[in-house]
Length: 275
Image (cartoon, rainbow, N blue to C red; front, side, top):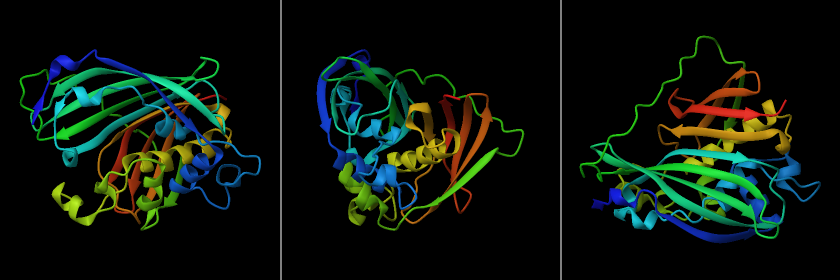
């Protein structure tokens, strides 16, 4: 595998992506929305989960220009979203993206990307997405290691905790929103990637966490949900129980998601919301 650090700064797009009410409903069910969230899981007074931005955004980032690598060795590192208004039930966006950074971690490479998504009809900016991908085995190309990550220090018990159980077939539902990577569905492919069994999509864990933040800190109102970013620290196995812990500081919060085993799976979380 060969990573090309000169790809930093490359941009791509615009890429257009449209969606319908059905896409929003399928995503909501894929990240665990159920009978007590009918405004997201049915057409009655339908609203869209803010984390749906990770499905229809992110376009235009020229990830295919950073070099050759084995897709089975790619895992999601971090994900962020920033929303400027609620996502419509039916709509379309045009997204432009770029490669922001490529870091040499020795055991692997980290590729950071960002994307701006604007309403295809009006040109109004709807949301921004940022992400980083860790490519195992792709390091050692002589690049910079990158800045050290600041670790959160929690000096008190969380202000809120929400517990959600994922289903054993959760990944099979979530993948219908677009991510058909067999790492999440094919046991043989998962073993090639070093996992005993298919793992849950990181963005599915992200969606479960976003639901907890939305309902707990935004009174289930998507208009109050402003930004969310977090780092994927360990894989989730479909069927795991997720606990989302929140430490509130004014109109922002730090958050962390862990499994029933106590393993932290989404870390260094930051969230902002409207009071």
